[in-house]
Length: 201
Image 1: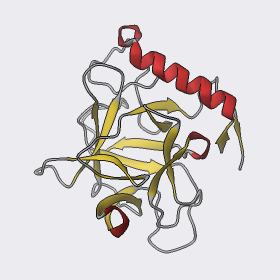
Image 2: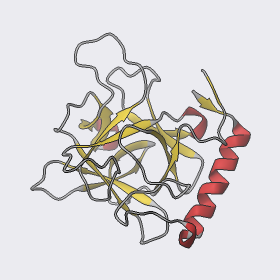
Image 3: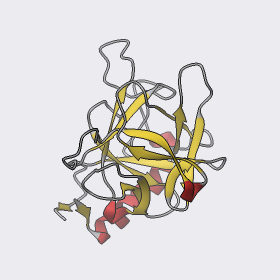
């Protein structure tokens, strides 16, 4: 799916407004992660992960997932994702800050054994370290969403090897989502947002 250029600009302006005026955002759960409309992120719902500083979004090396790396590309090429808690402690579907999450692309896969849309980490020479790719397995690939720079409506992503280790911030390394000392501030927009118009590739 692609987002038309005019509506991409509308989304970015809205996201900037939401980030600039956090007092306008209300949530019933103070630990909930919020989208650009101030609504709580929910497990299983699909969202675009957009860069807070430009018109880039998270996508993959191919719209058909086949051991694809996770890239940062113009918003028109963005692929939606879903979030799901690694451990569900109650009946809530709300995605919380600092909780361990599985992340999956909402995209078809190629017909190859072991291919999944779930994010995981692998070493990539191009980033001289570990980068986000696909082919993950449930409960073995933990990611987190936390606030970026305080209560400003922006978030950052981290990878957590396990519950006993500290998490590694993810940033933009040669247009790939990879472990970095410089975090990548993001916002979340529902893929079904009424002000966005989609068309098939």
